[in-house]
Length: 559
Image 1 (cartoon, rainbow, N blue to C red):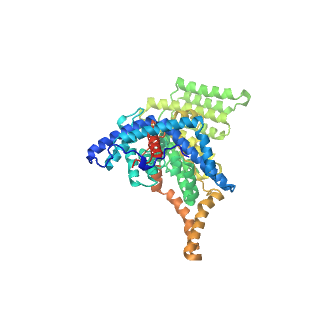
Image 2 (image 1 turned 135 degrees about the vertical axis):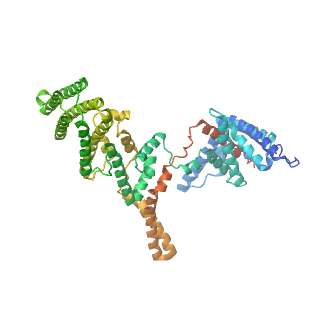
Image 3 (image 1 turned 90 degrees about the horizontal axis):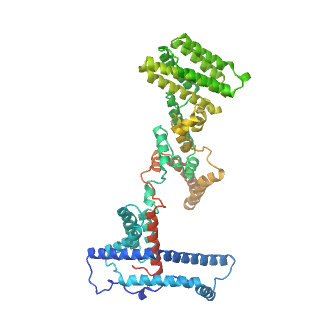
């Protein structure tokens, strides 16, 4: 037995203004009076909200218990609970102290609602009914901070109008209370159906920036990658099949092109031929610029060389130190003391690169030679700034490309057996960044930093395996079987064959649709951001809905 008042409609006291002898008011007067009536009713209901929540909870719990009892009895073949026994159980509940308190509160709530029904104005026109419903939503919408007018419109007027429209469409049917609730939810954005229809996969501002960074690099994304949805990404992979594999290969080329562009390379693959040509070009650029200038020694060069030697010696014992490090320092000293022009600088630098390549497997030697070479390059840059300022930008760009080229070489090598293909993935690029790059990565000042960050987070690979056998059967086998069954009923054996073919083609087509440019653009759009459920305004609207729905459930519908 429910605690709700179940008075039949004929016993309800007529509301003021509902008597047939009253003259029909003008629409404007009816709207004004109805809106005022709704404001009063909404304010009172807001004050009774704690009792309303408790009352709805009791009713829901009672329904769950009754349904559970019937289900358990049906499982064990027991007869339904008799009316006599049910009455005894209800009587025991009603005689408890808590139930008596609840019933007293609920009776008082019913009495308050009866007084409102007897004394508040009742709408006489359809616009008046809309005005009253809007008025009932407004009191809860104005609570809390924010713009008052915006709150009244978004959480009072819009959901109120939507709720009344849904109620008018289903008036007199069992669906009316539910339609009013759904209408209010949809109108408010608590259930953002309209928003999700436009922007189905909203993402955070941070992810939007990463997505845009990749698009700016010319890298296309799938809806699953852009949104971070694992479910959608798996669907794109499993249903896409060959199309997904082709898309992944295209992304690999696009990411590689974006990476190698940092070294002045224009290519989709970092193949050995492409890398060799790039190294030759960059080296020629550096040599040409150095040939016209002399390396001018300064205290900074001496300090940088001393630091490189000290760092190496601190990590390697005296007996294990490689002569190549000290020999390289001596070469630079001869270069400086000889006052030679760029040709000598070029020869010295080439020897350093050759020795570094020979000792790439020895981290201490490789880093020491790299530090020595960088010290020499920095000194030449300062020399060019003094002797030929017009060439400084060209030198800095060539040196930047050379540093990036060294990272690209490591990234290609990190691919292992796939290195000859020349595809550079985000993970390979990250692992190849120079020892000083972790700080640059944290500070976001490296040439590869933004690309690596966005690539690692967004460019999750699309699997080309097609998923597990079970998932493949669910996604591809079941549609074929269902279609085959339907075809058999319609046209016998031939229909079953055609149905199976058609059903098997559905996932194939779905995968290609998901990866098509228009669908990918639609899934990735961020035109509308969703309403946050934690918003105080949304909570206020929920209060209004609870009160309105409870009132409709406890008493017979007003309309």
